[in-house]
Image (cartoon, rainbow, N blue to C red):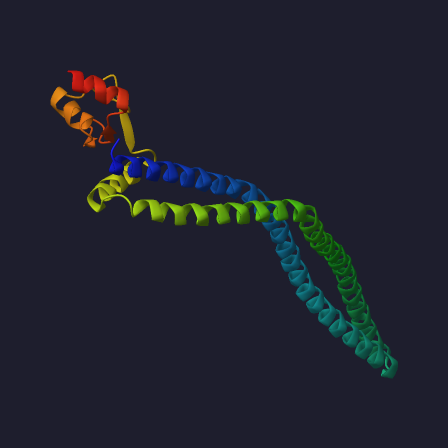
Length: 242
């Protein structure tokens, strides 16, 4: 094999290694995604409980104000009843006291129910917040493990890419461009050996004239699948014999 072929195959080996590392890195994403989804669901539960508590707090404040108004109305009605002297006026004032008393009782009943709902919603929020804390504690070992794995792969990738850059400099620019175009299209190996006078990738027969060129050290493009082809030593000798 000539120097360019040696350099190209070394580059392909490096790219295969980088692709494997990138695959390992990508495989971490679903694991992290599951952890994130669980945490996001807990955060959503907290937000929902917080919103419900805020709505009920506003309603409770409104009911409290309403009950206060009825209480003042009832107090005024009682005060007016105490001041009347005529029976007819006393009857009307008494009726007003009864009306305001019933309204106050209803308002206080609603306020009490709202207070109970408020306590329940506060408890729900507290539980949701505690759950987020529990999830963080439960997930910490898995997240640490993922972080260590990711950092390790990142270091390997940095080293592999630096080595790859050095290897790429040994490949003639036009050949490198052709190789990178093929590899980019295939997202995988771009250089294959002849296999019994056929393309090592798609098994298409290679014409004798082109095989002779490869036997002399040329790197050809498969007219069928577009990969780069070379003649391995045994194939090169057989092609030369023909």
